[in-house]
Length: 430
Image (cartoon, rainbow, N blue to C red; front, side):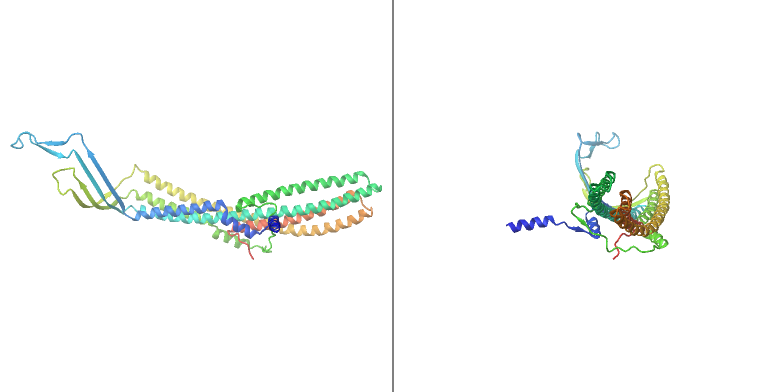
């Protein structure tokens, strides 16, 4: 029993790890925003199924029972017949009427096929928007994951810096007792130590917030004990073919396809409005029964009828046609605007990508030089060749360079993710 309890405690104490690919997969399966978009797609499918029923005949059944207070008679005027006060029953006081059958709209003024076309495009749009939502969620997951990695890396740097300052504080206290330095030097170390602790606390806050966002996106709690694995299988190319990326974005982005479909839907809406000025032709047949008139036989019968109707209110369809034209013009303008926006975002991110690559090179050089500077400063301070102020300057420059190098590296990765999102595909390259 004791061994079982120990095994359970060990199992709970071991934290599990999470990779970016796993986080993305969980988000695709559990994210509520994606599920809502997929439900919109299913709703559009059901509306399409509804409109497809327009090709089927309508089933009708009418039954009516009527009861009058008095029986209605027809009186024959005097002189028209040789009988006086002649009258006969017009119809029974109580009677039943039943009518059932099928009615089929033969011609609807092209309204029926155009309604179905609009519904088909709406199904496509909802499917495309579901894909857009997936890409948006994948981007958010990737950025939140990287933000958490940045915070975790900075926490490590600050802990390392805190440890170095603790050692420096111990050495300063020793030198102070020996009368080699003043208390001011010791206070400088203590102030610097508090600054580092403040930065570490801020980084912990950022790490928690990034994990909260990640938890929200993937639908699972991501606690502090969950280890986020480094992104190892991701390749950032040295150069980006920006013209090719622009062409790919304009051809691949699903939002552009949605807007194009909206323009087509406006064309079909125009035809529906125009069709209201055309006569509609229908045919119906079925069974009829009535015992309203006692003298008529048979009481029931089969029937078939062909008819035509034309009905519209004022010139309302004309204004509906104008509205459809305006909606199409708006869609085409929106298409141009979204294309321009995509190009603007792509080139802005491209410039940022180039700048960050240069910054990363500079940051690595700065870190290397700052490390050498820091090591030399420590040796010189131990030999009392430089002051505490000089040592702390070297110390700050080294750890600032170390933080900068990590931040720039991850910012470059975030920018590359954003570029892939603009182009329309956020998948890890192995």
